[in-house]
Length: 114
Length: 113
Image (cartoon, rainbow over all chains, first blue to last red; front, side, top):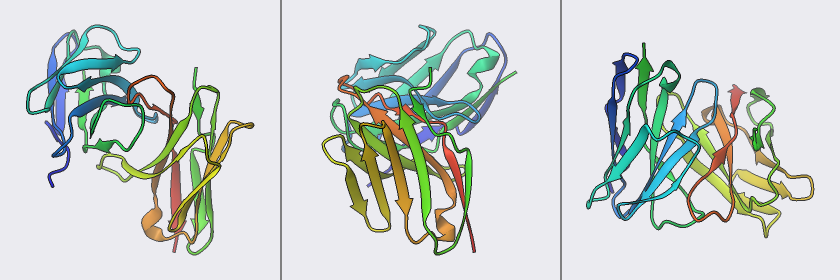
């Protein structure tokens, strides 16, 4: 059973640039959620994709967007990067677009915006 | 507005003793709670959960207690082991139709050998 994998693990961008982060969900899972973890904070929900459709969104501006592909892998895109976007971005997969249950997290992509 | 609070940023416990990690929440609509453990350079891993219809759930050395009237939950680890040293996050969910978990800020547990 393959776990959740994310790429890249680290990246550095400058303010105003755009970034794409990628996530492969765990085998058998059809739901992907993205979280942002700023330094010293807990993970904050960005959005969730279930069967290729956005299925819930947290308090993040529209410049945060995503995609889910037929194989259930997912991308997180952030446009017009700001310094405050520097954080660890965590992808989590699960089965079913319901309320509860265990999320399986990847190791995260650490983004630094200069 | 922090809906899930972990007021102790860190905790040190002697090996073999009990570790108690606390979490408070403000939203009475939350009905499902989880604890995650995070080691450096790894993603959070699920530890234990509890539904609001229960007040206790046990899994080996880990027990979670839920006090709905106080909007408080706690994680007990007995006996604590050095490998338990990690950051522990509590998370809560309501009936919103998504896995939109609200996480606390975490408590760093250090178990001293």
